[in-house]
Image 1 (tube, rainbow, N blue to C red):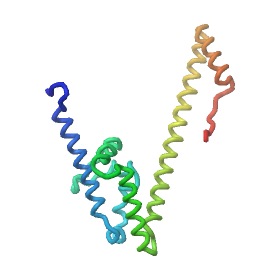
Image 2 (cartoon, rainbow, N blue to C red; image 1 turned 180 degrees about the horizontal axis):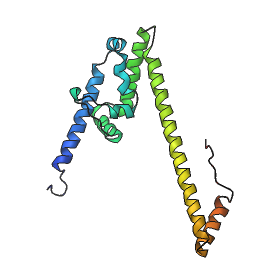
Image 3 (cartoon, rainbow, N blue to C red; image 1 turned 60 degrees about the horizontal axis):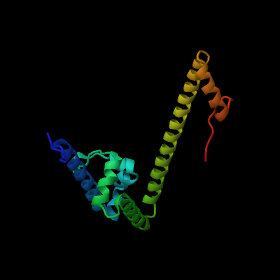
Length: 175
């Protein structure tokens, strides 16, 4: 059992594995060059977003999935500029490959991957908003039933409806 202020051996092992995995990701990125990207453009795919970089798994290279927060924390220590510095380096490498390629550019693939990632984020946000709306409507229905039995709940329910509207709630798009 570790003493106060000490890190448990299991936690230290997990931290060391995450650090090693982050350093392996950086080493894999540094091995990329323009010629390699022209032959194998798919090698840049893990670097398109923090989600894909954190989920990347390649045991042969010593890369294991870690959380996005942990990845960002260790990238701040291991790569100049942290995650933003890595994104800038990826963009620079992609731009260099683009200037030498005439047919299908890496930038177009990168834009398509970024657009797909943005679409996924938008879909997740929409699903979360719909889920919260469904929960709110369910809660309103339960309180409405309770207000028929208890006068205190009825007063609070009427006050809520005065503040937030007595008409049937509906979803609105907020910009």
